[in-house]
Image 1 (cartoon, rainbow, N blue to C red):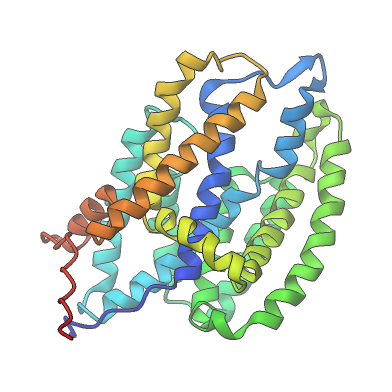
Image 2: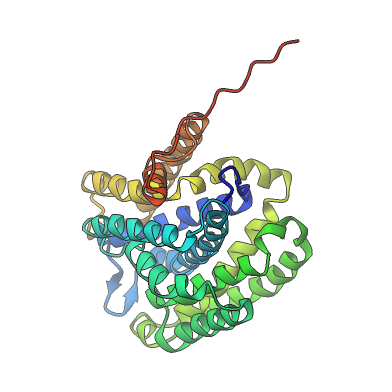
Length: 333
């Protein structure tokens, strides 16, 4: 057991997680407020239709994939601190499930409870499998559910396994060395995502539930967004973007839950329920993102973890974890 062993954070993944939160927020607003989907029988509200193709099913897969990846990284880190890392991780997942159970009362479509259940039932046992078996199971599970079941929460197990496999193959730890590989995947994913998105857009609304177009287009869009952002983060502009996104990603749990509260508080005053004012929805999403980005940045200047992240960590390790940052020693010239 090595009490002082600490695995360094992968800041690109924090930025991607923050990016995924922003996209999920847009979809959560219209789901929570029950905004109008159609303007006439069988005809979607035009802006909602466009936003569905750009956002719906694109960011949830990224978030789910990153959860599986973080699961593996945490398990490896826990093994450096304790002889029973699986017990620690199981306690972490149970705590997440309890939080999700409460959150579900306010947002019925929330993901924390399903994440906890799938983590306990599928991901934790799968962590002992060979990495090639995890990868195959993840690919089969993800593609099979997308094609045959139309996606949704059924994608979680496969995406979790793909995240786990990504960690097991050492891709996360060597992401800085994989620029050309990211470029190749992006070059293939982008045109495929555009074609699939056009397929989804042109599919009549009443036929969407009977086709795999949204799920397939969503996964390809998620892959294009993920690899595209990782490439952008390598540029000077991307470094500035990461300064805003990474703190949000480090406080993902707090921001995910607090966004629900902010939406429920704002929606009655904005009259979003039953409306088709998706421009106002985008304004609310932008306001919440700006607030969360600023608060996350300021909070992490003083504290090591977000509020819910700190509670979650204390329950995970069953000890009171120090939360305040140590002041930097003053320099003497």
